[in-house]
Each structure stands twice: as C-alpha cells, then as structure tokens.
Length: 320
Length: 254
Image (cartoon, rainbow over all chains, first blue to last red; front, side, top):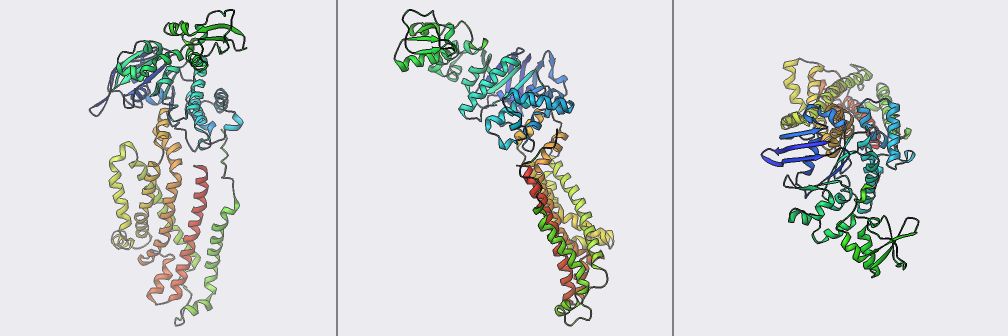
C-alpha cells in the first residue's frame, strides 16, 4: 500500500508536482502516464526518496517514509530505470545479486537467489551469468535490470519507463513477461510511461498527469469510457478510443453458443475484440467462429453483437 | 561469488615483453657504463675522466627512484583525493579552486619552485619532492575529475536507487569505472617526473641528474650522455609498465 497525500515538489521555486493525492493498493499495478515533464518520474523518485518531497505525506503501509533511513528504504523497494543502469564492470550474476549482498545475505543464499531469478526471467544461467552488460541485447539487459530489482523480494517495484528504449517487438515481449511475473508475484508496482498503449495493457490503475497534477485516475476501462477532458481523450487516442477499448476485452466474454452454420473465419477465445473486428474487416464478413486453443469450435461472434457489447464488458481480460 | 572471468583479459605473457626488454636494457646500461671507457672517451676526447665517478650509477638510480616514488605516492594520494572531493555534491564549490591550483602547479616551472623552496626547506631531497608533487599534480587531478565525471549518470542513479551508500558507490562503482582514465593521468605524471627529478641535482639531492649537472659544469659531454641515457631508459621502462597495466585494466572495463 502506497499512499501519497497532498504531495508537492518544488525545484527552487518551480513546482514539478503539486498537491498530488494518490493511493495504490497492495498488489496492484499503477501506471503514471503523461507527456514528458508532467512530473510522473518526479513522483516515482519521491517514493524511494531519491528526491525529497517539499510538502505533504508519503506513506508505505501506513508508515511515513520520512521515518526510514533512505538507504535502508531503497533496499526494500525494487527500482528499474530506462537505460537499465546496470554496472558495466560487473557481470550479470553480480549485478543481480547486488541488493542481497548489500543486505549481507550469506553468499550461498545470494547465489541461489540469483539463479532463481535468472530462471524466472528466462535467462539461462550457463549462458548469461558471466556475461557483461555490453554483451547483452537491450531486452536481455532490461531482464537483468528487472531481476536485480526483484532480488531481495521487495513488496514494491518502481519502474521508470523501463521499456522506453526498446524496439516495439522486444517491448511487447517484456510487457508480456511483466504481466506473467505480476500474475505470480503480486507486487505493488508503480510504472511510469508515456506510452498509453503500454499503460492500458499493463495497469490495474491508470493515473494521467499533466503539469504536475493528476488529471484523472481510474481503471483503464473507466478512463476509456469517460475521459474527463479533451487532454485525457487525446492521450487515449481520440477517435481510436473505441479500438483501444476493444483491445482490452477478450472474445470469450462476448461469444454466444455456436449456431448450426459455422462461419469460415476463426478467432480463438483468448484474442481481443479488436483482433476479431480486424478479422471481420479483412475477410469482409460479419460473423466469426470462436475456437478454443485446441481449435474446437466453442461459439460464435457477430459484428452486431461486438459493436453493442464492446461497451459493456463483463470482465477485465487480466483478471483470469 | 567467485571472481568473474573476463573475456579478453586472460594472462598474456607477451604483454610483459616490452617492459621486460626495457628493464633489462636499463640494468645492462647501468652495469656497463663504468667499463665503457673507450666509448665515452670518443664522446669527450678532451676530458681527463670520462666515467662519472663520484657515485655508482646503481646508487644514483636507487636515489632517483626513491625521489620519484615518494613524490608519486604523494601526488597520487593528493590528486585522487582532490579529484574525488570536488566531484562530490558537497565539494563541488571547490572545483574551480582545485582546478586552478593544479594548473598553476604545472605552469610554474619546477626550477622556480626549487629556487623558492630551498630557502624555506634547505638543500636536499625535500625541495625536489615538493617541486615534483606540484608539477605532477595536474594530470592526476584533471584525469580523476574527467574519469569520475565520465561515469554514466544512469549507473550512479541506479546505484543510489538500489540502496548503496555514497561510500559504496565511490568504491565499488565510480572509482573502478574511472580507473583507466585516472591511471592514464598517473602515467603521464610519473613519466614526466622521472625526467624532472634530475633537477634535484642542482639543490643537492644526489640522483641521476648529478652526472648531467657535472657534465654541464665541466663541459664533459660523456657525463651528460651517461645521466641522460639512464634517465631516458628508466622513463621508457616505467612508461611501458604502465602501458601493460592500462591495457589489462581496459580489457575489464568496457
């Protein structure tokens, strides 16, 4: 549980964050979104006291962060940054083991934890443990960055545009990986990004910031349905909002039992309404057969139904 | 955790070839000079004595090394310390001052430092060490500052974010990453000072400068060549040792 109450940060006389109140429940994924300079990174860096807030209260599990020694506080909070910040003169294993060693874990335990994390992040120990950061691809390096942040099993993970420097394909892979990790680990994550699609995809809670203030917060769906003003609307894609909403909903939540006559084009239950719509446009049809992962027909979806249902989703796709 | 294996830093005996050769040559020359009367007679046909006799060359070499070594130790300690202080948050105000003092030290001719130091410190090795420290400070201070400032700010920021203390960041992150640049400064400083130390002969610090000064005073080219040869070989030997050290360091910090 992270609680910010009326928090402001001034650099000299210039406000970077003003009167920000935000509550992030335990185990939830909160994305801070906004254009550059809106104060989202500043907000993040106040939580682990890399920056000191000028006014207001920041609490972790009901305890003010001012009560902690900043160094000890940071060892309890995972931190991932855009350009990884891996130590170039340390190999992968040593980089990952940093915080456990700072916490004076016995060597055997550190080594065991490092191997555990490398397995968790899909980095084979034999291949990667002794490599140096400059020998890794961007995606591999950021996996190491995430592993390092998770090493001492912190409850909270702060991520400052972690995938911002990666190519779109790698970015998508790491987003997928992060979603799977979160489904298992249930960390409280604060994730800063300027990529709205990334935020919509990952977040339980979306916070839109502008000029150091929160413009709107809520679930991705609630923002898509009711953006509070033109700024949020444009950030959410304006006319594309409908498609983004469709991409948050899965076919299985809107299909009906299959009729006697099966349409030729097929979608799987796990695909999104957006993908289904795209398929209809591509194949110039109004009906799709829905199949399960074993390719057995389990339902059907019509354009008519898709258009009417997309705005009344029954379930968030991430909550399965 | 076991010490990491660095690709490309495997021990290569050939790396040591050049410094070893220069060292052997230095030792051979020091040992041969006293017996090379014929050769040096040819350099100074007029002179009655052609081999510098007032002290053995091994002894002069030893004293020379001692002076340069003592000065290097002080210069490195002072220079790196100053460079570290002015790159800290709390020491930033001193950056212009330290940079200026260091460049002043180098622009001020060592001869002038000697002239000023002798009345205060007397004759002997102390004034020459002072002169060498002042003269050698700039490259070390400058490179320490450049090296520390060259460390990727994202790395330092991550180090803070992980919960390292400023001391841990300096020792485990900043200094190791800046080491190749700092070492380059030390190399320049020490190599220059091997030659500059010869000036000590003018204020009674007996070292490899003695034969040179004696040669100038007595118009004896043979003495000058003997002193200069040994100093040059010493400088080249030490410089090539630094070269090896630097290459090994660079292979482990990409």
